[in-house]
Amino acid sequence: MSAFNAATHLPPSVNSLERLAAWANGALYKLYKNEKYQESDASPLVPIITAQDGLAADKKEHVIFRLSLVLDDDWRTSTNPFWAEAQDFTTAPIPDEFLP
Image 1 (cartoon, rainbow, N blue to C red):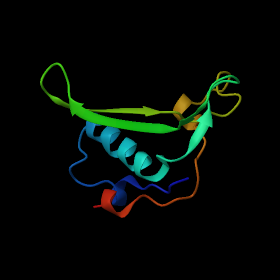
Image 2 (image 1 turned 180 degrees about the vertical axis):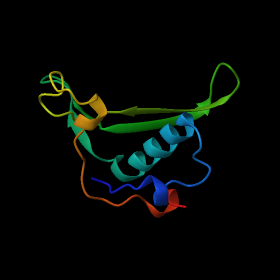
Image 3 (image 1 turned 60 degrees about the horizontal axis):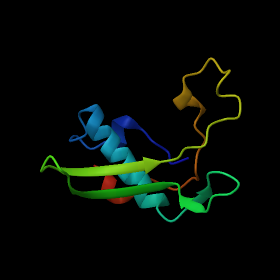
């Protein structure tokens, strides 16, 4: 688990759900961009998170993240929300450049 305290770890500029998603995915990408897993028995290893940025057809800059989180085996029958069933990758701290 990357220990997280919203009161002390979130920069003031993270003030919307979209910015929170960009911040969290950016931090996870920084930490785990070289980690891989196998999605199915016959598939090759793929990164657990990818990020791509660039100019889209709408002529606006975009960042695209693809993230795979491990969920507890019983998440479908759990009464918890699915995000509470996400398993931690490691105990790596949040990268300094993502802290206020």
